[in-house]
Length: 250
Image (tube, rainbow, N blue to C red; front, side, top):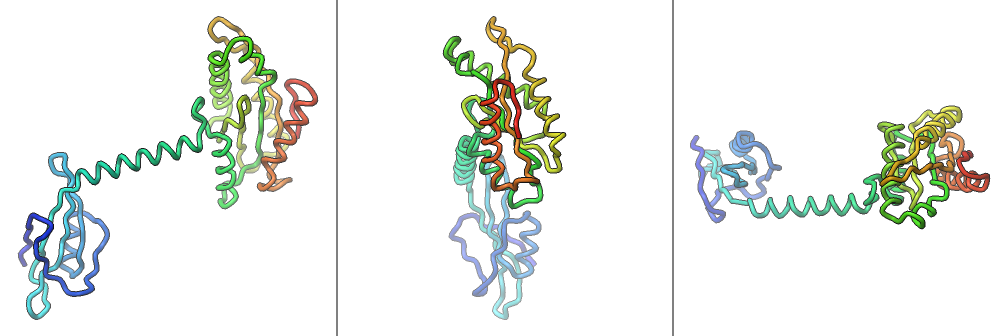
């Protein structure tokens, strides 16, 4: 059998009605598919340009396959536009889910993440919300630039204290930690202590040494259920704040 290649999208292709067109595959596999009777496509990168090839079986008057007709098209511009569109879509999706300052999940991203966990086998064991005490005093007295630097330092310290654990910026000066499945109340208390320990050293920013404390609210999934986890952690945080700075409540 002869395998021929003809340039141009308008080349004549002898196929039977209803011939199947396969998904993109490698060049050799695409030719084999055409020789087996199915139209196929393949992509090639040649000298920095992307080509798509449509391969169709060529049949004689009796319907027997006697060769393959290949039509090549340069789709470099289309691929570049598609890659650019996908990149922009990914950037928009990231921006919608993440906090622009810290790069952590934002509040909406956290809610979406918890919703995704509800339909998976990776359910959280607990949710810890922490709110920096009297943080408005930092912004009011030292300015938002120093305030943002403090938030970045806090996010870095807490993230380092919980490697591999999902963390989010829950509010202007609040963060969330999604603890893994199987966390007990004792372990959650230990986690709260790790937060305190991470924040204990003074934050030194532009010549200022700042003491940062945080109130914490914790909700356990095993006792409350995922649907109310965020609400219950919020409620626990409110109670902790009423009891004074640096407090933790379940």
